[in-house]
Amino acid sequence: MDKSLFFNRKSALAILTLFVFVFAFQMAEPASAATLISHGYKSFYTNSGDHYKLTWNVYRTGTYTAVDKLALYSYDDGSKAYLTCYIKKISSTKVYVKSYMDGRYYGSFTATVSSTTSVATYAKSFVTQFYYGVKRQ
Picture 1 (cartoon, one colour):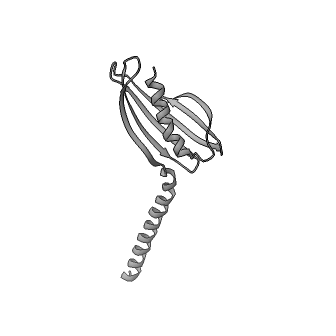
Picture 2 (cartoon, rainbow, N blue to C red):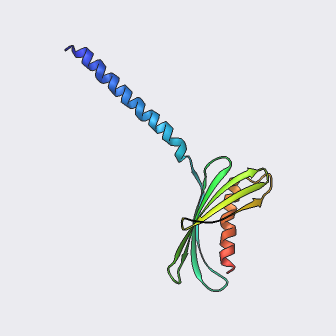
Picture 3 (cartoon, rainbow, N blue to C red):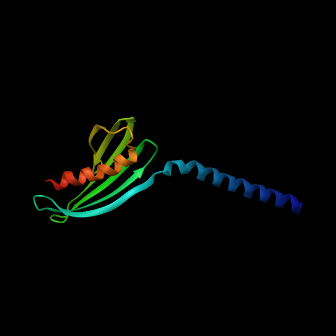
């Protein structure tokens, strides 16, 4: 067998394998396009004296979509609750929020926002609204 022919087959196979990996990587990238835009935690007491810690991550998943992931921990009884909110700007002045608590559907609502409010801005402000809602208990 001619060694140059064997080398050409080996090179062609290596180039083809590299092409397949590059193509697969480019196809997978849009699925992981969520960008972390805010994160943090806050320890606080409610008006009734309960001690909690709230942690959050806010992701922009597209031009008109975002996801809030919040976790609420009780220092008093050790309980935890996880809230995931999918936020979508459905018009220039309306935002739709669909939420899940501990993996189960929790509720949805439509909110009116300023026409200059981006979905990312609303998603970050939602964390603040949630915090004050729990704090008032």
